[in-house]
Length: 50
Image 1 (cartoon, helix red, strand yellow):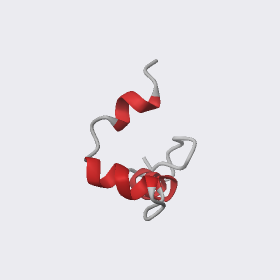
Image 2 (cartoon, helix red, strand yellow):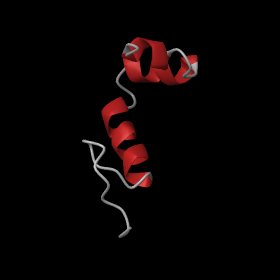
Image 3 (cartoon, one colour):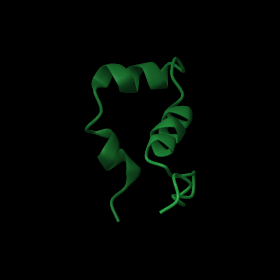
């Protein structure tokens, strides 16, 4: 498995800088993206009935 820093390399520098300054919360952002995919924080499907 690749490490998380490998995946962070694809993010724009401005986003990483804002996260490092505490201006955005990457945990909250990840939760929003997962919710948009119909997943909870454990990647369990919680969206519409299949």
